[in-house]
Length: 221
Length: 102
Image (cartoon, rainbow over all chains, first blue to last red):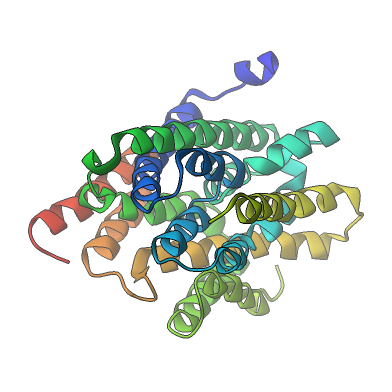
């Protein structure tokens, strides 16, 4: 781990911290909303630590607030998180070579760590970037959730800070280098078009998965 | 929400993560398949970014958010440092909302 630490690029650290800080703000709002929705504090913390997938955590809180069934929350949450499987298929080699690293690294496989690592190729720098962004995100997200839980109603709406624009902007910024290749650009444009067209008709989570249809225009390299 | 449901969601989510991570590298895959797996991640991330930029609760998210995202994309394309991309995208959206743009 020490050798890993020494290989951290300073600009990668700064970028990962910026992303994690934005996640912390959303984490605070999750903690506050969850508590306001009547989810007990130990469950709020467990959701944050054990599920560690923002969209599905907010879904659980929304279902709890509306008095919906827990089964609906689980099914909806797993649908939202289904994209993590193909992320893993793309990232397995970057996460680690040995089983313990893969078992541990799997838990910090999120949109941000996937995009962050993939912006840095397939080599050692991508691996360091994955662990750096994933573990910082984990720490910041959970600290944020704990803070929001304690602060409760005193927490401002993160939309006032524009954090909801920061995430898509960050993802696009991380994806831009890989979209320089013609096949990736075709796939990306096709995926975005299909996902957006599907949005009015499908429940949350599915439009992003339908984006995989963008692969049909991958063509040759 | 109860503990059984919570733990089911946590276990299911972890399995979704783990299956992909374990399969890649354990199972020999031809280059063509590996290329599609990598492009698949790109497809998902672009879809996610596009829907996150434009959609809220199944409808249009309003103009402030996509405007801020657009600012971020242009800055990233001009090779402005990532930290500034994130901060200025958020600040643009926050400023527009402060000015009354939904």
